[in-house]
Amino acid sequence: MTSSLSLPSPRKRGPRGPYKKGIERRREVVAVAMEVFGHHGFKGGTLQQVADRVGLTPAAIVKLFGSKEALLIAVLEHWDVVTSQVMGSPHRGYELLGAFKKLMHYHAHHRGLLELYTTMAAEATSPDHPAHDFMTARYRSALATMRQLFREAVEDGHFRPMAEDEVAGEAEWLLATMDGLEIQFLLNPAFDLERSFAAFVDRLVARLSV
Image 1: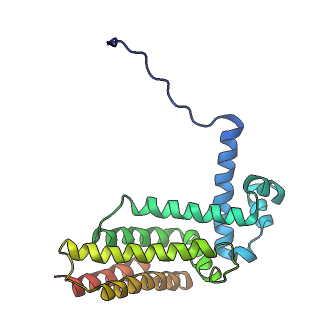
Image 2 (image 1 turned 90 degrees about the vertical axis):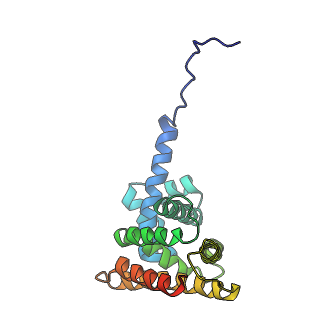
């Protein structure tokens, strides 16, 4: 039998001292590296450029991450985290289209993240690029997610019945449209990325709705 007067459970403490400072420094380096790699690419972006902007030496950055390649992977993993946070909780089928609109809004106001994505997507087509495996896996995952979007939209009665090859085609077109509109925005900042994508979604829904 336990007493009704229980001792308060100890609160979990966050990182303190040098360890906390190290975590914060890593976050700072990742944020700056995201901009450097996004603007210059992995090959064109240097550790010296990152180091100059965070007040460290290239050697200190290598000590934090292990290598330039490891820093790039940390940047790409952070990009994945940010994307998930922007889109919000897991969405089912039709609801995912609204989450993609949120992502377009975020990209329109955070060009650095979008530049990183498009630059890495182009560079990483080379099999020897350090981001090749990450980017190809992410594209496979994105297409799988979009195929599931259309399947579930059909199951839930939002879209008319579709054969699997049609589902695959719609997923490919959706991903290609998102990428294409984002590139137009990067090349022409006056291009209204949010409006154009919303119009595409409206036409897609009108075409596929029951």
